[in-house]
Length: 106
Image 1 (cartoon, rainbow, N blue to C red):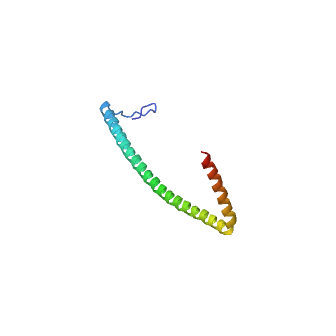
Image 2: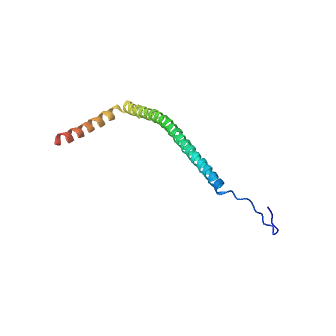
Image 3: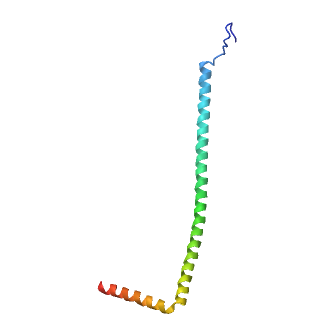
């Protein structure tokens, strides 16, 4: 309603109506909070499963990488031995002597 001075008056909800709308807003907020908790829980589970899946892939890749590098080192050692047999025998004998002397002192 407009008054002579240009102010507009609206009807205010009664105390009972305000309590009702307040309760329904609280109910909606509670319901939304429960839904949000459920959604966050679901999101956490999804993230956990995705992380576990990626970890499994990384483990498989790491195992393959280690195996490949081990084979490369083994091949390199075998190649060194094949290229320098006398030097390899002398190195092995020297290491054996050092271990033998160290072992005997204890």
